[in-house]
Amino acid sequence: SNLNFEYEGTMRDCEIKNGEFISIDIYAKFH
Image 1 (cartoon, rainbow, N blue to C red):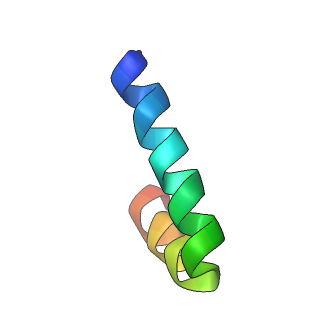
Image 2 (tube, one colour; image 1 turned 90 degrees about the horizontal axis):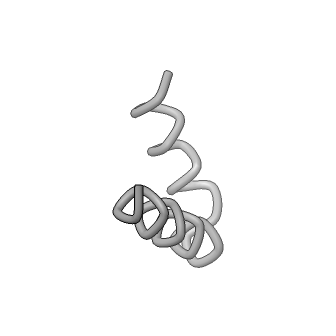
């Protein structure tokens, strides 16, 4: 649970930094 929280926080931070690129990466992983 704690690991998942840290993971989501990291991904959210990356999304802010990388914008659309990370969003596409997340979409590819979860869809």
